[in-house]
Length: 79
Image 1 (cartoon, rainbow, N blue to C red):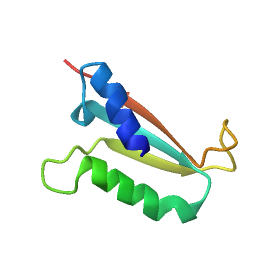
Image 2 (image 1 turned 120 degrees about the vertical axis):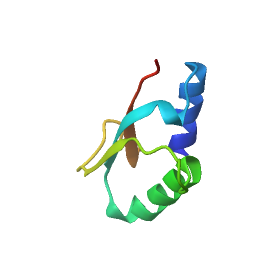
Image 3 (image 1 turned 180 degrees about the vertical axis):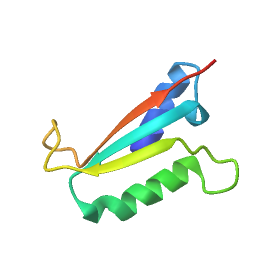
Image 4 (image 1 turned 90 degrees about the horizontal axis):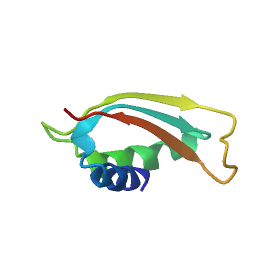
């Protein structure tokens, strides 16, 4: 999933999902929402203590890469 890819990138920088402070997700179809939510829940977890960065989701007419359905922008920080 996209969030597994994000986790891999964060680990390469010595960080993890708990270091995310914000995500912005751009999606072209509301039909993809159930899969997006399921993938996010699998990676972030749903229990108490699961990472909960600030999040925004925006529906758009298209993305820069024509074959993409979803794009996620993320901001992470580590002290």
